[in-house]
Amino acid sequence: MKQRLRYILVVIVTLFVAETVYGQAPQKWREMHKVKKKETIFGIARDYGLTIQELLDANPEMNQPGYELKKDSYIKIPFPKGEAQTHPQQTHPQPLPVREGSNNSVGGKASTLLPHREGQGGGSTGPTIHMGVMLPLHDINGDGRRMVEYYRGLLMACDSLKKLGISVDVHAWNTPDNENIAPVLRDKDAKKCDFIIGPLYSKQMAALSEFVSQNDIRLVIPFSINAPELFTNRNIFQIYQSPNSFNEQVIDQFMRQFDGYHPVIVDCNDTTSQKGIFTFGLRRKLETQGIQYDITNLKSSEANFAKAFSKTKPNIVILNTGRSPELRVAFAKLNGMVTNYPGLKITMFGYTEWMMYTTNQLDNFYKYNVYIPAPFYYNPLASKTVRLQRKYRWNFHQDMMNAQPRFALTGFDHAMFFLQGFHKYGKDFTGARGSLNYQPVQTPLQFERIGNGGLRNRCLQFIHYLPEQRVESINF
Image (cartoon, rainbow, N blue to C red; front, side, top):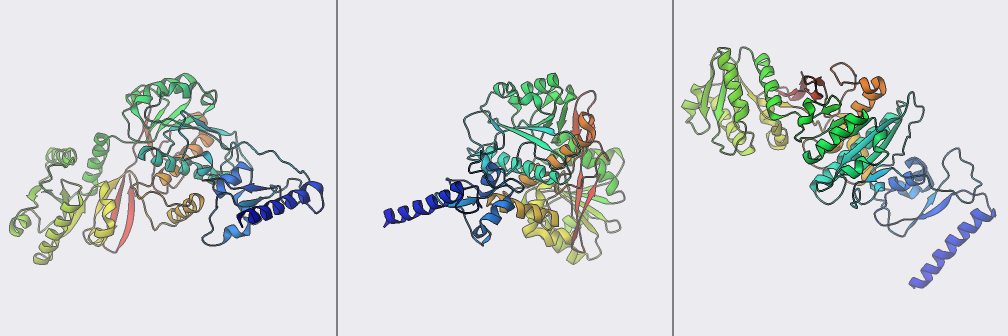
């Protein structure tokens, strides 16, 4: 039975080829493509120089709910729009130029990323921007998988920018943890980059810093690494903010935002907490400015706990931990206290990781007017967020990782910001406040120069959960 089915399939394909090559009927399809393992609709479209819609139009069954590509099945490959349909054979266009730094593949193969073509801009209003990516792009461990998702976000931004007439040439190199980055930097395409996003690992930083300095290339460091070169190399943008720098900004804005409040610091008895750097700095600032504050303990009796609160001023409560269990106890403690003292005015000031607790604590966030300082804000209900998550799911047949922040959205914002910046200003782009009107999906960026060195992101938001059950972002 299997042989018979195979014979019928061969006959069908043979008749199709005969029809298209020998002109026995008008040639409708460019060829039939046999699906290989792990191929995607989007990778196939890219490899043949097609848009996704062109491929879907040629294969209507792909639009059916639950459709999946299956290994060894055949799909029709149409001619690109505007191309003559009389040629019996066509050569495939070059795929996305993924330059590998090792034998590790990018998420299995380049076609699993996004159907983005080199230099594809359509109606470009300026020169092509050459963007390099030097990150661990593999499926070996968590670093690789996170960076593949981040990279997909970069490519989604490139696709979006086509509509604005911005042409982007993308070159990506896989640079895993154990990789010597020197061979990657010898690649002739590396010197063509206007800017490079990377690295993820501190050990690769010195060589990459020297490379961009010698070749007048800008370097965007997207995540947390040790990069002392920032203080001497003017070509570097560092997006990550160190804890010390971030805490200094938060404390300064705290003092302005809560002028006239009575601060209450709650010791939560968490021996693993690393929030002392913030609460100690805040206490020192309060003392310097002569502002009275109180300290209480999560284990204190209700009467002693209540003594720390002002009955005449609004209270701003700060815990010395960011953990969920202690936060849950703190809310229970506050709920009991406001029952006994209904006139108390209480606002809570939290930490970035509290945004992960909204599933269980959202009502309390609204009730206690919670403010959360963060360099990003993932709003799952925002229309732009919903649209990009749907597009990601449609492109890659999976959801974004459940992480704060979302890596694909981070990549999307980074690429949108820097590509538009370099398109508008060239290599004079500094990312300063007001230089662009891009509205980020998740990660706002605002840079300032560090002495005679590079540029560091200084963007800060207070995410505010208001009692009327809405959320606002206050940008500084």
